[in-house]
Length: 344
Image (cartoon, rainbow, N blue to C red):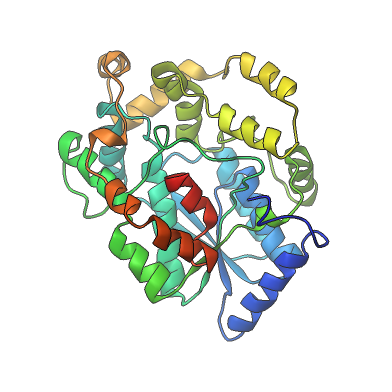
């Protein structure tokens, strides 16, 4: 990734070249790109770069899963209002989303928040397809986030169907799932490209937060992924407690590789346990909202841990197309980060 995104030119020059092409293709359209926004640091800064620095005309897209914090909602509206960016929010059908998400808890797998991730991807590409927009901007940065192992976070539409069939109730008709047919429709039929703008810029977490706070009425929410109450619960309580998964490891490892932090500093940080002040209230809020009783949750914590390999998924199908996917990353149809996630 460093080779692909090396700073052999002045910072932002490559991104300006991409923006020039996007402007040319979108000259007759109301918007020339889609930007996913959650109210978090990375997506907010990505939106800032897209509009204020590159001069593009983005449509900001938000997927509301019912767990937005007040800070995240405030951040979204503040940055969109200040930059005069239109915002479209897709609100998940709550009963369906609740039933799908709770089924992942009863399945005893760590991927409980992929229902949101799938919804985000589906919403962005669905709107891009409708608006005839060929570029979707994503706020991921390999230098500060890295990748979770597949056994920590695996995501595909068939996996969701398989887990829901065994542990869910109702149906998936109103769920924003992402299938192989969606991939073909959005990526091959329409050729919608994913742009990761933060890979092209010198990205420092503290400087980014200061920029957002100075430019907008933007508030920090305490830690990475804590802009959503559900994700905050997952990464700070549920995953460490049940699976011994500490997602700070992938973030810190990425920053070590990018020389943003030393190994010694990272080890000191990881020794400190994850502490959230409102832990019990947060847990009760999440469980009540998902209609999981305290007794059921205690039982979930005791049960044997599983992962995606215990269910039907597209994984074996995906493995067959390794060379094909690699070629698609070479010609920029698929992001290389996707190839690294599933094959490296």
